[in-house]
Length: 179
Ligand SMILES: [Zn+2]
Image 1 (cartoon, rainbow, N blue to C red):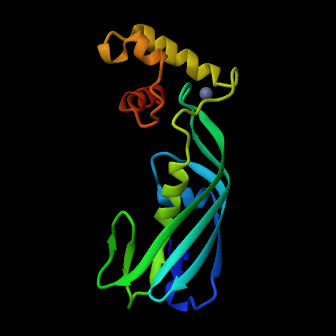
Image 2 (cartoon, helix red, strand yellow):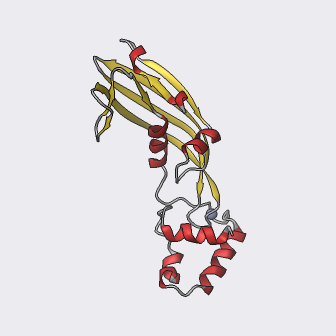
Image 3 (cartoon, helix red, strand yellow):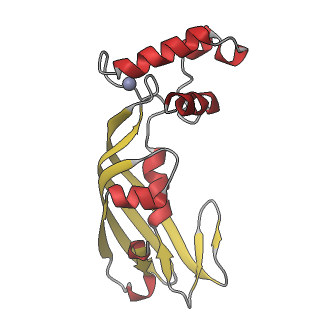
C-alpha cells in the first residue's frame, strides 16, 4: 500500500497535487468493515508552512455498501472533501487535530485516512430505492424472522432497522443467510 504515501520532504513553498485511483483492489487491501468495493478518484493538495502541512482531500466516485433493508450490495455515490493536518515531531502520533510524523521518515501514509474519510461520508440510513431490494434476500429474511423466537429478533425491532450497518444482529443474520 506504499503507493498512498505522500512524501512531505519534497513539498516546498508551492502546493503539490497528488491523484489516487481508489479501485476495488484498494478497498480489498484496506479490508474495512463498511465498504467492499468502489471506484473513487482522490485528489490531494498538499501545502506546507514551515514544518506543518495541510492535506486537502477531494473524493468523487462511487462505492458498494450493504443495503440496510435487504443486506445486498448497493451503489452509493461519493462526493466529499476532507482535511488532514500533519506536522513533524519526534515520534508518530495521531491526536484529534494533528498527525505527527518523525521528520527523518518524512512521509505520511494516507491509505487508511482516505478510507476513513469516505466511510464517514456514508449516510446512516442507506437503502435501495423502493422496489429495488433483492427479493430473494427479503424472503429469506422474512422466513427467518417468522421462525425466530429470540427476543433479540422481535419483529418490531427487525422491521425498523436502526440504520447502523454494523448492528451485530444483522451481521449474525447475514452469516446465517450465507450458509
Ligand atoms: Zn436493499
